[in-house]
Image (tube, rainbow over the protein chains, first blue to last red):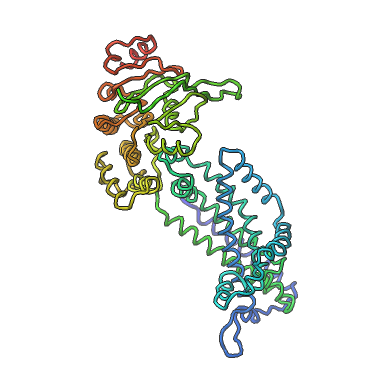
Length: 288
Length: 250
């Protein structure tokens, strides 16, 4: 085996550090900005009148982003799996449904989708289904559960359209990932399940999908990370997620750089822990 | 004799050829009746339509015309009939097709619990019985990839038997195996034949045909060119094509 040349690596790395350092000094001298990092922590947690610790604006935004990403990733997985299966069926009709969904959802800007769903679902469907009223008239316990799991009852319809938009948009990508996975499963697996008399549902549930998900887990993780990042666009319909809260805060405090950097780090923490979880799952999965 | 358990009438199956223009006949006007307890060995050169014929018997392959009736149930487009046939006809594949993400135990018991809807205890008992029958009880918690080819195929046979089928189809079950593993699979198949299982076996194993087969179909170009008693076949093949074939392999 060839010996690795650490000296060369060291030189390259030193030059890189030097360049970054010099650049940093230059920017610091030419950049007139008085940093105020001390103001940031209290936007995470604050003390209320009685001295108890309460989450503040950034933390609330962070939690909303977590909830929104969690539910929309879950829904996207569900929609994507179903549509991915339809896309690979032999009959024309299911293929048509799957293909149409994927092409429409994938070829529309998510921002446009958000507006369509917000005005359509937010205004027409949620009120006609009575979700508006239902969420407002919940009992004390119901309200608490709804708030912890989703959002405040009065914002629930908007949250629902945000969730739905993200799920539909990301679901199209999941569908293509699942389709790729399905096509990589050997024909023999389908034939064996057929010959043994499994129902269509059992065939996918027990035999095909477990093999598919094992294969596509890395791609699905990537998609979940995308969902977290894309969730920032729902700030446009006033969902109080991380980006929205940050921008509100900037408007009132003018701590533009501090807050943007903080938000970036918070998104990063979220996505990096998801990656870590996924690679843990990958390692833990039984090898066959 | 009693009523045949498999009745095939005027079976035709074509595949689209290159350019989708020419149709290639895989099975041509096949008529055959198979009775309970028969062990029918299907032989012939590659491309003769043996596997396609076999796959038509449980609906894995849709045929163009003709009819297949299994134990009085017609194999048609009705889901109920198809399901009935799928349950009653076990199949063993050349490439085993075990479920790679499940242990041997789960591979065998899944169909018993999900399709036959048996209780957990019954599943466990049947699984152990079957593994004993194919002689690999010690591998019950192994994954298929940890088994040799011969062991995998024996598990696959156990898995098909788990459904307690009336008929077993073997599609070149030993062709993917190393020579030293062929006999362990053939032994299981012979034992099955002795128990009186109705079997349709596509194979090139002359030893199996001679020892366990009761009847021999010789296929060429999608047609059954010979349909005779096994013993009779070895003693005096009539058709020129099977004669030529026999002289090549014997």
